[in-house]
Structure formats: structure tokens, C-alpha cells
Image 1 (tube, rainbow, N blue to C red):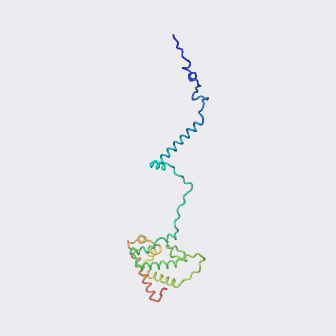
Image 2 (tube, helix red, strand yellow):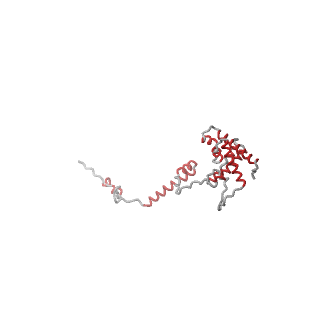
Image 3 (cartoon, rainbow, N blue to C red):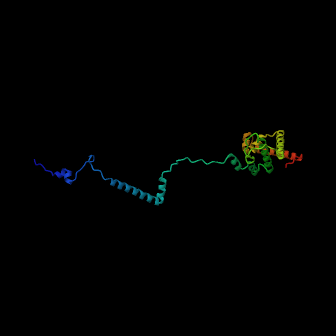
Length: 228
């Protein structure tokens, strides 16, 4: 049998190349230098920077870059806006009696009578501490509160109010719906629903009640009590 003789360099890589060959798992395998990793990392960073610059210069790329940004987390809670106080809101809100006059539900004489009733109601309930809706007509004392001294106009205003309440009772007109609109500033439709009446009843009832107040005022003036 003929035996084929092989060159040792064909089977041994170390002999063929002249350099020692190490396997992947060999513990003695030489590691690449650290500088090569730094160069590769610097190259990747440079490419990403170039790509980002190119994307920001293009219109579509700039929009995409802004949309891809992460939102900045809020580290502290945003304080809620502070609204006006109840007194300030009452001053800023228009008088519903004036709106009724604009819509034709009341005339100027009715509005004057309603303001007189509101002012007298505030005078009577001031010491009792009853809550009022419109704070713009209330006098606020910043210093020590002096002893209340009634003026002649206030006394006559209270007398007219009491005479009007008595006249309302005689005429069998309810006082509550009038105070709902004049003092609590309820709308006419809300007053209709509260007193379970037909639509438009609160307007007619308010007009009749204010007409009666004007009649009482005229009678008081004819009797000699003229307002200063």
C-alpha cells in the first residue's frame, strides 16, 4: 500500500503561518488593545451627532427630532390658579335686576323699588348676620365698629318696608318669591320652578309686588314723610 506523506505545514496552522494560533475559548487568547474600543465608540458618537445635525437641518427631520424628545418631568406640582373671592366675584357679576330691565321684564321704576327693598333688607339683617348675595352695597368697617346710629333716611326706609310687607299680606301676595329674585338673585325661571308655578308667573308676581311698593311709597310721601 502506498502511503501519502503530508507536509506538516498542511495540518499544523502554526507551522503554516508561523504565528501561534489560539482558540476562541482559550484562556491565553490575547485581547485587542483598549484604544480600539475608544476609537470605535468615538466613531459611533460622531456618526450619531452627524445624523442628528442633518435631521435637524431638514424640515421633516426637525419635526421628527422634536417629537422624539422625551418630555421633561415636572419635579414640583404646578400651583392651581387662585380665583377671585366671593365678595369680588359678586362685584364683578352684573346686577340681575338690570338684566331684567334690559329684557323688558322690569322698568326703571321697578328697578328703583327693588333696590330700595334690597337696601332695607340689608339694614334690618345687618346685626343678625344674615348672608347677602350682593356685597357691593354693604358698608365694610375696617376699624373698631361704632355703635349703629340710624339716620332719618334709614328709619323712613324701614317704615316703608314694613308698610309694604303689611300691604303684601293684605293683597295676599307672597313675599318669598320677591326676595328670591331681589335678595338671592334667582332667575325668573328658577323662581317659577321653586314655587311650582307656570312659566312667567314669577315675572308677573314681581311686577305686581314692586308696583305695590311704589304705591306705598307714594302714600307715605303724600302723608308728609318726604325722603331727604
